[in-house]
Image (cartoon, rainbow, N blue to C red; front, top):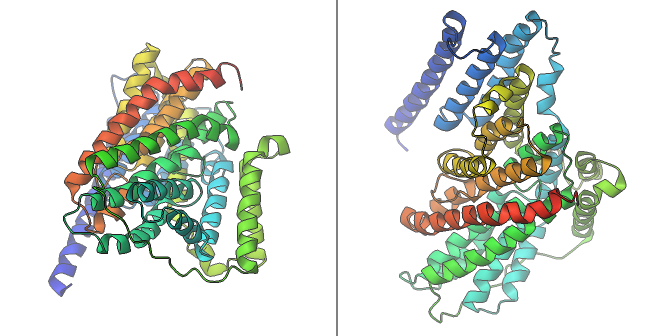
Length: 467
C-alpha cells in the first residue's frame, strides 16, 4: 500500500467519524431545542427515543466501531437520561445503567470465550475437526456432511468466526486437488460459514443474539436454563444442517469425485490437553445441569475463568486476546433495553405494534431477518428484542416470539457482509458473491419458513406445559 492509498483511507475514516459526530450532536441539540412534538412522550422518553435512533444509525452505518456505540449509549444514559429521570421524581441510580455491562449473561459469554481460547490453544478444536474428516475416507458427500457437523458443533461452544477460519485452513488442501471448474468446490467452502451460523443457535453462548434474548427473558421473569435452550433450539439446528447438506449437494453436485484427505499433525496428547478437555466437559455439564445445581449459568462460567488462569493453562496474553469488543457490543444492546424500560418508552412503542399475535410474529421474524442481512445480528437483536419484551401477553407467546427473533438474526446469511463467517469465507476468494447470495438466500428463506411454521408448534409444547 503506497502513501496515497494510506492517506485516502485515513481521509475516508476521518470523514465517517466527523459525520457520525455531527449526526449525534444534531440529534441531541434537536431534542433539547425542539423536542419530539406530537408524539405525547415525556422528556425522559424523548431522550430515550433519541438514544435509540442514534444507536440505530451508528449500528447500521458502522461509521464507528460497534463497541464504541455501546459506550456512547452508556455515556448518554449517565449524563443525559439519568439526570432527567431523577429531576422528574423517578429515582434511578447510575448502577442501573452499569448493570448491563457486567451481568450474568455477560459472565456466561466470558466463560464461553475462555473455553474457546482454551480449545484453540491446545488444538482440541483441530483434533475434533480432523477426526471427523478422517472418518469420511474421501467420500465427497460424507466429507461435506462431516464438515457441516464439525463446524456446527464447534460453533456451539467457541467463536463461529474462529471456527470458520480454522475449518477453511483444513478444507483448502482439498480444494487444491480438485479441478478449478468443479462445482463441489463451492459446496465445501459455503458449508463452513453457513454451518457455523446455524450451529451457534443451539447454545446460549453460541452467538450474541442468544445472550440478548436470554437476558431480556430473565428480566421479564422467564427463566430458561442452558439445557432448556438447547432442547428448544437443537432440533431446528439439526434439521437445518441436514437441509443445508442436501441443498449444497443439489446446487453443487459432487459428480463422483473422491477427495484425498491429508491428516494434519496435532502433536502428542499430554496432561495439559487432558486438563483442558476436562475443564471443557465439566463446564458444559455445569451449564446443562445448572438448574439442578442451584446456580446460574454465569456462576458456572466462573469455573473455567478461575481454573484456567490460576493453574496456567491460559496466561495474561490469552486474557488480553479475549474478544472484549463482542462483550461490549452485547452490553450496548442490553443498556438500550434499560433505557426503554426505565422511561416506559418500551411500553409506548409496544402499544403501536399490531395486536394480532400471528401478524406480529410474522412481521417480527421478517424484520429481524431483513435487518440482520444488512447490519450486525447483535445490533439487530439489541434493537428489536427490547421492544417486544414489554408485551402484555402470555409467557408462552413471549418465549416463542423472542426465540424466533433470536434465531432469525442468525439465519440471515445471504450476503458476504451479513455475518463474520460469511465475510471470512468470501475473503478466501474461493467463491463469488453470487454463489453466496444464491445458496445463502435459499437457506435464509427455508430457515425463516421453518421458524414461522414449526417454531410455534414445537415451542408451544414446552412453554404451555411449563416443561
